[in-house]
Structure formats: structure tokens, C-alpha cells
Image (tube, rainbow, N blue to C red; front, top):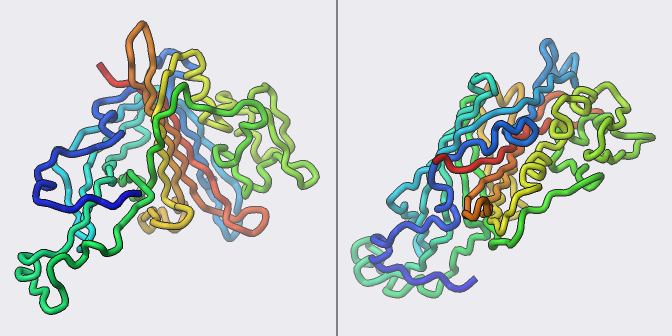
Length: 347
């Protein structure tokens, strides 16, 4: 990464730079909602079964999987936000979002609001005669100090903060990838059996998909999957199978016959492999009974050719992990809560 440019007062009047987030501006709604197979959003949620607790009756859970409709609004914040860090300066460009989700009967399921931040604008700001005099910097500082000091070089380009009325506040950090030609890749067959995207986790007692203590990979593109235990039967035999098991397969199937010429991919998470970290804060009730401990988010901004026109399309997969009760190995069970949808801008 090249050295950041030197800060000048002109930085205060430069227009906002939203990066790839600029494409999000507007109101997005479900695309092709009359297609009952792929046209709706979908969520899977595991919750403690009534009457259970970790001390006496652990492991029983209530599973919910249903279609939903969504309105997702992005609004550009017109003025830049300045973060001062001494030698380093950062300008954040913000995009506010508001998310409203309802079931197919119109009942409200989810509300969320927050901001996406474009974080790539960094400056180097050495001391000058005026700052040394104004901030009483002598004798420690002199003009040009900091001009060759360490630069802040973030590995991320974007963040998302949000508030969810269940009682959780999220902070995700991540990056955008260079634009790719063609359409996003999603797996088929047994390759789709990937616990990073399933509504079933290994901590759920092998999830009813182990034989002789060895994991069994299920081909989610075939009907009537083998079921070894009653424990996860409701997930594997749900009317929305295979999406009840791996929701992002609906994203794959929604674009199967579309002419997508390119896309931008954004990935964010609360937990990173080294470096800066995001996080989740829960209210006391949520923290005690069903704490949300981790979140992963993937977004594709796609360019679709349809009737000779270029149309922007947004797809996302959001995975949060609840932790309640004990798994078969004595560790806390991780219960994936997954949301996916395919959206287009409202005309």
C-alpha cells in the first residue's frame, strides 16, 4: 500500500467518497416476489424450546424457517466525518441504512437501522509551526514531526454498525473485492454441505448427520435426504428444503437463468483472523439466555442485463450465531441464524 497523501485544509472541502457503497443509494425490495421458490427472502432461526434450560433440560430447540419480504433503504450522508489520530487522519463517508422485514402475511419480523462506512480515505498529517504553537507542542514537537512516522494502513475498507430491537448492537469490519466478470459462484451437490453456511452446526451433536462418528455429507440438490436422528429431522424435512438447510442456495437458484455480466463482492464479520476486530453487545436478557456471539455478512452488487438494459441487483447472506445450552461434547452449542434475500431498486 502506497504512503497516504499529506493532509491539507482542502481535505475538509473535498466531496464525499463512498466507494462501492455509492451503488447502494436508494430503496431495494424483493425481486420477482411471485416466484414462490426463489422470489422471497428467507430466514432460519433456532431458539430454546419452552420449558428448557441449560442446567436441567439442555439441547431442545425450536426451529423456525419462513419466507419474508423486505424493504432496505440506503441514504448517503452528505458530509465527511473526520477522525484525528495525530500523524494519521481518516475521513469516513457514511451511508445510512434502514431495514424492514415482514412475513408473507404482513407481520413485522425484523427492524434494523445503522450505517455503512467507507474507510479508505487516510492522510498523513505532520506537525507545522502553527499546530506546534497552538497546541503547546514545544519542546517535544517541531515542524514536520510525523511526516515520516508510521502510517495507519488498514486491511479493511468498509464497516457496518447496526442496532437490532431484540437487544443487540453490531459492529462488522471487512473489505470489498475488485469487480469480477460473470455471476457469483455457489456450490452444487455434496460440495454445498459446508457448515459455514448451514442452518446446522457441528456442535449440534453431529446434527444427526454422522454415521459411526464420521460426518456424512448430504447432497442438497437431491430430494429425500437421509436422516439418522430425530434431532434435526425438522430442518432436513422442512417444506422449504433445501433452503431450510442451506439458505444461500436460494441465491444461487434465483440467478440461475439471469445474464449477470459482473459483480462486486463485500465481506464483513465481527471476528477477524488477526488485526482489528468488530463485536456484538447484547442486553442483559439476551446475553444470559440466547447471546449473539458472532456475525458474518456477504453482499453481492450485481449488474444484470435484462431486456437490453443494465439493472443493479443486490444479494446478501447474513449469519449470526446464537449460543445456548450444551452440545454433545460439553461445549456450548452454536445455533446459526441465517437471512438471505435477492433485491432490486424500487422504481
